[in-house]
Image (cartoon, rainbow, N blue to C red; front, side):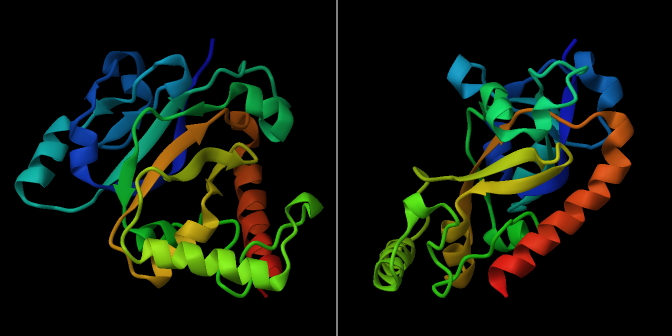
Length: 230
């Protein structure tokens, strides 16, 4: 049986984005939920919609009081068998089980930064420097691309290009920004009040390994930021 997995972070999300969701099957997962508001992402490629498992009253109260963002736990049902302890750690295998939320959600980019889930903080200085030689750009091209993106984003964030945050991406234990590091960096630099985010997911690490993997994942992401931004 496949299990319910929950994000490592609470995400401050616009309550209007949550209120448009239909109610989900709370009774199926009630004993597993510890947070006041939980959204279950569906699988957009399979036509499965995101749903709100619990917290409708809190959402309505936030809207009534004009609260711009409220903390949301995101969850998903993994398609990876619970006895498969390898797939979640191997990117090519994990990709076969990857799902994407049907909706996009709006957040303040500084709230995302404070969560410390970026694997790289992009600036004009380190823009478009990739380890893969297939994506090599010289210094002039890198600055040109960054400046063009910066100029376009000064007008506001385009919801057609949401950031991709993958739930439990790192070692099956920690959420990280998967795609959109340049957009994220510029949004912070431009002090944009909102960015669009979609969530993706695949699986979670075995429960017995979670305490150890959590420590390793936090060290890993710290080292990645240090090595790429020193």
